Length: 468
Image (cartoon, rainbow, N blue to C red; front, side, top):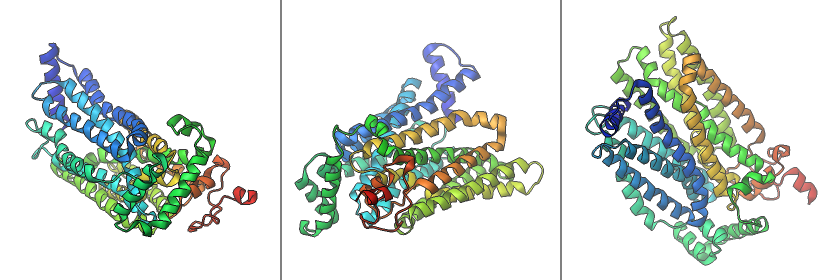
């Protein structure tokens, strides 16, 4: 309900400061309110590295919940206090909370999961995001909470699930990998692992051995403790870091938010009323949610490389189709219906892999030591990409119109070739194996080892085999 909240902002400034905002000033204030959330997300992503190591994966999520709760209170109270400053502060804090979650939650879930389930568990975070977006779209309808009386309730309604999750979080275990490798508490780590797997400790020999090997690799490579600067300057981590950041940023530069932004106008041009166009956009959100759910078994059964390349290829096709259809809508009447196909096709193909995989791929490319910093940098790239698209999309629309989607398609094509030549298959493989394959940067040949091999010997890079 942007119009309703803009009216509140203007009224708040007028009553508190005695000045009426003109259209340009009001648009600038609104842009600030929108952008401050993305700034908070970027800050929170970087903070995820610090809190994940110092407070633990579970502790970082608790910190995020507390910050999110404070933000919700500010949202709820902003109208009563007639304070646009509280609205801006709430947006900043909820952005920080969201940034913490997107950098820590996928890491936490994949570290809890056994190796065959790491992909499906990693998908649960983007599934939650997709579900939240859809619920937000529904609740923001003017008939529900998107109106003058209830918009503070709309902004603060996430406090209810946050409260439930916070209570549950108290009883959840800490990551055994974090306890074993980072905190050096093997007995507690094994106890937690036995609790998670619901088996006796004697039956965990395989996973305990894996933890010991990963601990040894981390200790051999540790020197000074891992931090963001060390990850950025370590040449052996250059390729996996670029893969994580490019995939995370590529989510946004694929134009997913731009497509949803344009969808109401697209549906209106096809003959739907404004209200029905909003409902059609919600239907597109349902498609996105369905694909997020479907991606759980997909991640369990199919390789990351295969599904990601399929997603990138088909996403490119529908972006080009959407651009052409919008350009020709004024000349060919049935093109408006083809543009609907473009929107729905793009959303579905995005959800196959480009939506879920970037969230958790960092957990499969990095070992435990550098993982929090790498995940934080990847999350920052996602939030930064969101900020850039939000900043320039209106300008692109003004000068390029539907041609903007061709630029998004070009970015996706570039990402496709980067993935095709440099992303190793990570499903069912230990991060230590992946680190060996990628340690030579762009000179690495990560595809020269058997894709489906689970053997450490078989998955050494060619140069390592020669050294042996």
